[in-house]
Image (cartoon, rainbow, N blue to C red; front, side, top):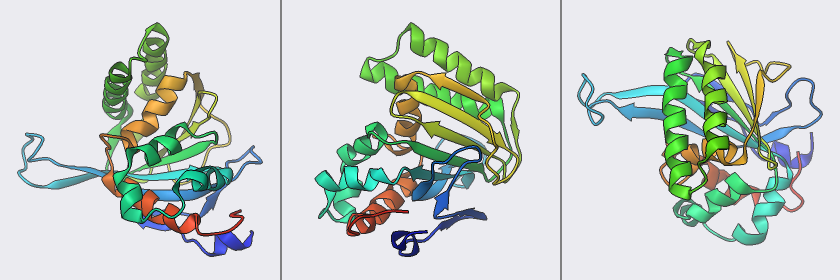
Amino acid sequence: MAKAAFMITGVKVEFIEFPVVVTPPSSTKSYFLGGAGLLGIYVGVRGLDVDGEFVKFTGLGVYLEEKAVASLTLKWKGKTPSQLFESLDFYRDIIKGPFEKFIRCTKVRTLEGSEYVRKVSENCIAHMKFEGTYGDAEEKAIQELREAFKVQFFPPGAGVFFRQSPNGALGLRFSKDETIPEHEYVVINNKPLSEAVLETMIGEIPVSPALKESLATRFYEFMKIDNFNI
């Protein structure tokens, strides 16, 4: 492992350890941890039964190809973590950047696959409609996404791995623990949906502000490293 990897650390979210670097089985490509954070809601705010209780659902970790740092450095080096955090364009450059993202979503509490994908698909559809990118192809892609999740069950520690390619492919893997499965369960080829999945996590209306803050803080440090590599 190259020198830069020893200068950064993994992140722990609840009981979930997000390592510095991951390499999926059957792949020669490695990804470094851009940031990690918790997804949860205050159920009292959402009108559920327990007033004010913060319910934790998922730990999220966003991994990226090594070249992401050089790509983002050109525009964002010198900005403070606060400036990065406040800039939607910074996160959009991550979402739409010409490098792969590998997203790990590990469950903190038990969730049915159908329950999880219902909210994910609702958020993605809302974003694509707002952007004017939701059409017949995207509707079909959403159905593929729902089909993939409907037979899944996620106890605590189980997870979903999304591979988001800049060419528009969205690969899915499902695991009962932190282990990355060797093969992708399905690949959905639809760029608006692929980008929308990450947009809903770190974009304008993020499900995890903590993940956004982690990305801003860590990329501030990454961009100070000359010739960043893993």
